[in-house]
Image 1 (tube, rainbow, N blue to C red):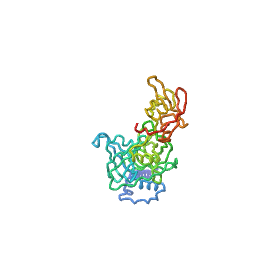
Image 2 (image 1 turned 90 degrees about the vertical axis):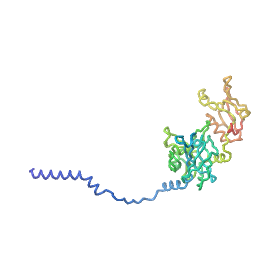
Image 3 (image 1 turned 90 degrees about the horizontal axis):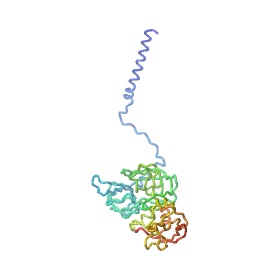
Length: 360
């Protein structure tokens, strides 16, 4: 190859390298969007998206934020706990979780409109983690959330949660009903039956907010998440609307919910497990109670002897105290139940009347 050909080749290579180095600058000069861009046309919302939008638009005005100052009040640095709630009726009653307002003296309720009003606890039912507030009537009261039914729910159907996670108000999350008939422990060794499990994100601050079906009807009250970190991990729980519709009117009427019982104090379940006992070990029988009238006995601490152990209610085995209280809840106050009890290795049946022990 001659010198002339070599020079031509080197020139071509140099031009190519220059073009490669200049390419970003040319692209920037030729294609930079120095003016506002045109909006691309959007396709119609899918049916699922339209359902989500309708549910939020219809229900979010009736969802509130419940702010419960700690012992230090609203002063800077004082602890503040907050949750969610929703309008129950046209009188200004708000439903939330009992744990949201536990120990709170004064309450503030922020409506979807941004208006903040005072709230007062009308009644609380820790056994169901439900509470009812009465708010100062605002200028414009949103409509109550319509009620649905939990009787015909199916695993896999859509579920929507509206609330105030981490203090961010008016948040919608969507998912499905993951499971039904869960049992959720509450205070006093009791359990809420038929709890709804959902994968709709339920984070701290969502507590007390509504769980809704695709028609925007209340099917449950969000109450807890199962998560080591405290953040949503795909498993949230809601108190079923049937329980809510039974407990809330009672709280509005009298500020409390009757608690079915027979007048006993149960021994610690850990103690029963250590003794390899299955059932409810009666620690003490209250004077004048149906249990005393039925001849049941508790632990004799002076002799160190066990009394009666309840192993069944109306023929249904009882393994834990929660099984026992659930059976009494199903029977109802004023009804008689047949207890199967064991003492000193012998079993017998005892008829006992269920009474309201809420004041004990």
